[in-house]
Length: 167
Image 1 (cartoon, rainbow, N blue to C red):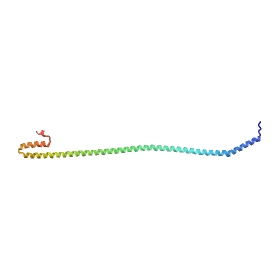
Image 2 (cartoon, rainbow, N blue to C red):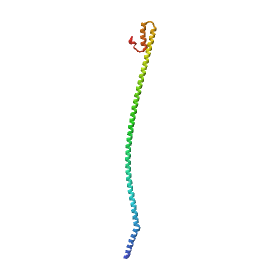
Image 3 (cartoon, rainbow, N blue to C red):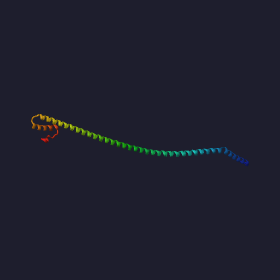
Image 4 (cartoon, rainbow, N blue to C red):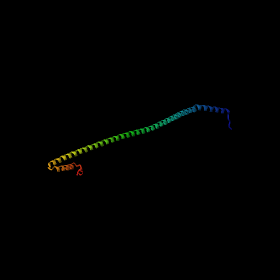
């Protein structure tokens, strides 16, 4: 059987307590200190990560707002450019219409001037023909026949077209 000596049991118990105290001082305390230091490092890292994440979310929100503002601003710029272009277009069309009206007016005036010039030329030719006819009549001897022939020559020479009315 097993013999237990009480003094041996007390010495074993004292040895265990001393061993526990030495182990606690030498091993457990430094390990706990290292664990606590790592815990604080990890916690500070997590806090920094959370702060960085919230900062990144704030920056993302800010950039999204800036992008939406930029989109609205670009639409405003495009609309303004369209209105400016529309105004320029209307101005150019109005100028072109004014220029076309001026050219048309000048062309009509030129045509009227040419027509008046042509009429003047025709009148001078008619007068010249009348003078020529009068000369020929005066050269001929019979006066009553002369009057009728002068009238006939004048009407055919002038090209008036009233010969049928006079006959």
